[in-house]
Length: 287
Image 1 (spheres, one colour):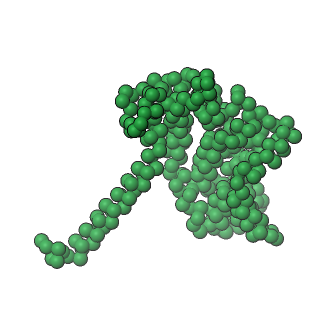
Image 2 (image 1 turned 120 degrees about the horizontal axis):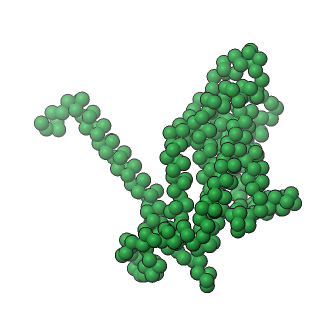
Image 3 (image 1 turned 60 degrees about the vertical axis):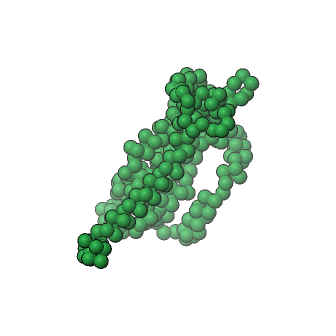
């Protein structure tokens, strides 16, 4: 059968298959670009120290050094630092998700003078770099006696986060007004409406918000380095500062191996909450 003798139905099938092939090819290329740094990190963690100084660069290790991961795990109190990171990330993730949901509910369902201006100021605060507020933040917590404690993350969590407030505001604004009106007729106040009706229906955004907040805190280096002592510090700080020789030179192969283990919890959390995360990110922008 020649190309000119194809029926319209056959031509449509060929077009669909071609489009799918192009789409899958693009997805594979983009996935490779995103996974490339992680793959290079894994290969670095499997190399001997002398291989890292060779030129030209060897992409694959000549002799796989699996013991690098064991050395990275035992050279420092890896589980202790991971526990500190987990405590901070869970505390902040839970509190900031709930507080942002409450603020987003207010912006979405309550009417007040200047609400649009306040929401604009809130969104504008996302453009402030963290370095601008770093010194004032430290001075405030130092005056309150909260340095070398986990209370700063509790207060940050209770203060909500602008980006998460935006996600919850968009989601709550799309829920039917009849739900709220029926609850008011039954005698519910807005606090009961939030906890009993709106919050249970927002599990996709709750899941997405918690994953985002957990990732922020787990990967934060500046705040723990500034506010916490060595014993209370997090795994991010430990990976970057403790794998050094007696002369102060970094042990790159151990840093890479520790970084791979450091990333694993984030990957597991994302895989577990993937469905809710994707649903939350997609439904928050729809009415």
